[in-house]
Image (cartoon, rainbow, N blue to C red; front, side, top):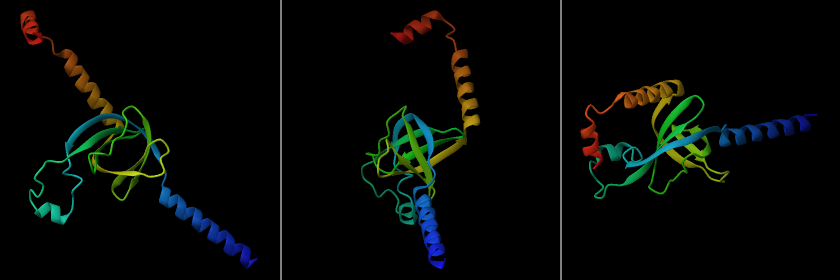
Length: 149
């Protein structure tokens, strides 16, 4: 009886450790990508007091990732961390970073989180921007023709 109980405890603890390691993945879609400074990827005390240690400006990808409830702006740690646009990806929060798994890959890529906003607020902001853009009309038709040429 004790032997069976020990086996059950060991099995459950292994499953719990594996589930904690893998985490619970959420699904999201990458809708925007731009290249920006890698300032968020070089964090820490030495980087903060070190000043401009880098001679060449590093650029890192910055992505907007939309999930069901939250919109994330994440920054890669190097310029080669690329995520395809308009793909549904799996991600999880891990030690104040976002761990991303693309196409059932065996490894995760870690991204720094720059911003987080609720999906409802992001949708409202996008609608407001769209309304503002549609409300802007050229006052003079010749002015519009000049800007096109």
